[in-house]
Image 1 (tube, chains in turn cyan, orange):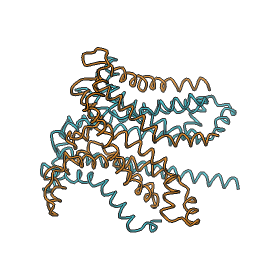
Image 2 (cartoon, each protein chain N blue to C red):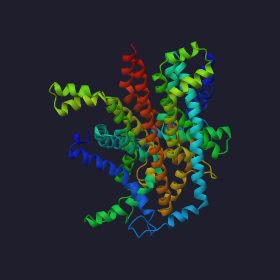
Image 3 (cartoon, each protein chain N blue to C red):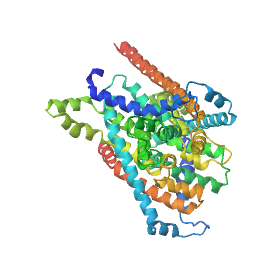
Image 4 (spheres, each protein chain N blue to C red):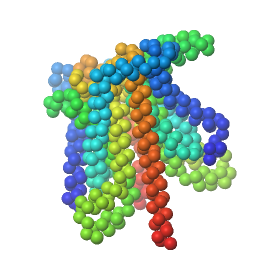
Length: 274
Length: 272
């Protein structure tokens, strides 16, 4: 397969990958530099990592960012999966379309609109800006992607399985937990991962709805970056990159495993049929 | 079953009401109030009569168009070539991986790369072009914005190409079409939906990027997003900010209508 690509094509892909990764590798490289700026590598050191691990404020912000990401994704996955099930069971076409259109509003809305309108909303409610407002916002903007990732799995699912479960005497709860949820688990899982990604990557919405006391990583980096380069941030991004690599490797192997299991199951079924 | 449906819709419906409908209504409502809190149409009057806002809107749309066009030009071949690779899922993951890196970190990297006496500047001096002002220019803004958006364009196009059955391509070749004809008459039309959703997911955010205009563009480029942020968080004129927000929503709806048309047609055709 690989030999099908001409030299030019390969060169093109290589250049795209270099452009995509150069800035990141550049950040990582300078996290080991002795200097204070991102120019002229001054020799290898772990100093910036030590500063990082002795900076309680930054560690707190990293923890807060992770907590917001995991909590918001968890809630968004639950609500989004419920939403997808609701849409799936809605037979009325017009209602279904309306709900899906409403669902997609936050997907396509620019971040500043979401941030500004949530800011007005929270201010009118009298909610203090901080952890809660950030968490609520992250849950809110992650729900639609979960719905969009779970719904296709529901539509792919063989609907007669639900009838079969009902015929065999399963109550709705059993049908849900034993038949439907296992069938759509890959969708739920990718929904959760996407929600985590959305939350970790968000800057604009958080920037609008966070108060003075609470900060996430992106907001913190924004305020630091406006003051100039600080190699402690480089050290942080190196660690961040490592975590991302591990996450994506885990995701990839899980997918491979699932694929493998599927084909194995199919082979068994075929063997039985024969 | 009916009860189940209601049960599912309680949290989800609540979310739609509180976080989808209410904020949109509120931002429209807020746009009718001036800074002193009086109901007025003056925000819209200001927007349409002062050339500043109209020019800013035009600029913002123009930059978003440029970003989308450049991103598309780079992404389509990439998505196509990725599909030819062995282990293409792994390569796709590697394209997506940079999007898992926080947006701010990537932008921050460019501050280091492009700043005076930064690496790119040193390189230019080394090859004899001499030091240049790279940061805080329009070009640097375009470059960084394109860099950020590329994976979001590649992903939908990649999926569209992956769904394309190779037998169409083979049939076209068998029937004597040249490589370019196969591409322009078969491959591109059949993957147009992917292109459209890519354009949608790049153009709309590009209208509202404010962080890159501040950190990389050095406030030379003012997008709609920058103006909204300025009004909400700096001058505290929420009314005017909301007015620009409404304009941005209108721009967004127009974009969606333009890029979503084909899809709807397809849907009704298949529904029969």
